[in-house]
Image 1 (tube, rainbow over the protein chains, first blue to last red):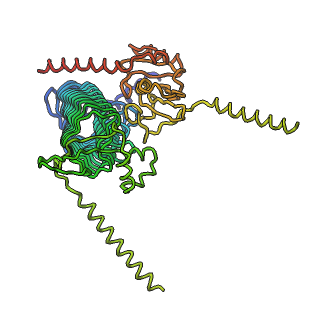
Image 2: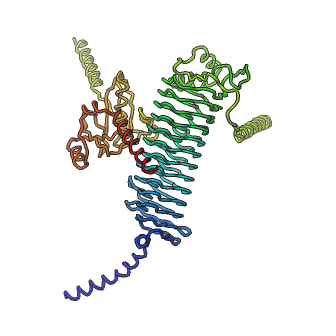
Image 3: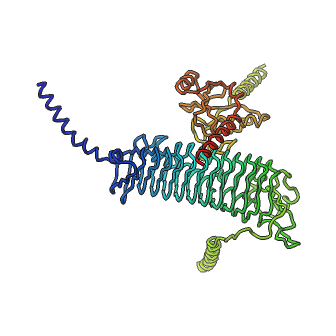
Length: 424
Length: 172
């Protein structure tokens, strides 16, 4: 009987043998066998497994390739140096707090043409340097960051489309990274820098997030040619928030239709130069911030151009304010009338929100001129410009819809008038 | 006589009610992730174990995303009348009074604003955590008040700059 059992055991064992040889055909086994520098092409199809890559190889999807896993570990873990991932869809279906689609550490990796679906984190860079991530789409469920950097320097992110995550790209203690031409929408914060220095944010679009970009305790950040649009869905929304950060260069950006265009708190020596600040509820807001420069910006169509609290010592010069009265007596392009952005209406409505009903009411404007806010709340431009520093195209769609609406209303009222009469 | 007794009862009752009101302790308000931002740093407050809260005597509640942010606020607003300060248990997120909690400071702990301090409702759990995580320091509420929150950030920043300079000199 004992011998029979033994034979049965052997038979059962032999049944599992083919499975072992099949396991050798997994992607991981191909990676393990591959020599440095080779390219592994993945055949089209879905692969339910997690990969660990620690040597310089190229992993490339041929056609539609999906790697999927709901395990605790990342779908792809990249370490060492010069690993390339190309043309692969990656999906992490786990819902644990730390779940990550792709985890990257090491140097000089390249991730391109990826499409990532995740419930938590998209790509995490941990002590990763010189990594390039480009032409990639990340979609989350607002429970983790799209790209998350921890002590990772000199990395480049380009042409990424990130939606529905916590923070689009989050940097903590990470320096010298370049974030260029990315599009981040419907997330908490578009770009979020914490204790990170010398990073360049260039030509990105941050739209319909709670905050377009957050710069926190970061130094020498360059923010140029970005668009911060419609960050207005939250009571705390703003285009750009600069908190306790110094030496930031904010040049040639567009801040359009945000709740607050730029909010600067406890920050010094920052330069806001040649930006278009348009159709925001508040254009620029200062709080306990001094020694900042606000020059050559164009302020158009903001409900309140500027507000300053405990921030009397900022250089505000040569901006264009559409709300300002302008007289140029000597023809130098600068108005002789000093412009003071008075947050009177804002202060009033902060105390009693119902007063918003009196927006632009003649009585309120009169009151504002008589009473005036305290000097420390005024933002004064000593030489406001006569002309805009950049072209401001008025949106055609709004005027069109306005015409459409008025014509519709005229038609409706006349028809009511006519038919109402006939019935009698 | 009856009238007098009646009024005595009414008065006694009123006094007791008033006394009860006085004893009514400030209660923490639940975090609303959609609208709550840190009073100090403006970041959204997540409903997690790092959230802290101050209730002022006028009933106003303020929330913070990190214990350090709360102490930054306290040092900057010495004249404000604080009724109660709350932190949360690291494990079950229960609100506890600052003085009733035990704290662990560990430079490698990640907190929202990198102040590296977490709170526990019982001392034993805190000590257990500290024993398991190297470099931990047990603190009481009294230690927190004396803790140098600000320089903690500065220190970090300095070491940071050094790292970065080293990195540069290597790469060039």
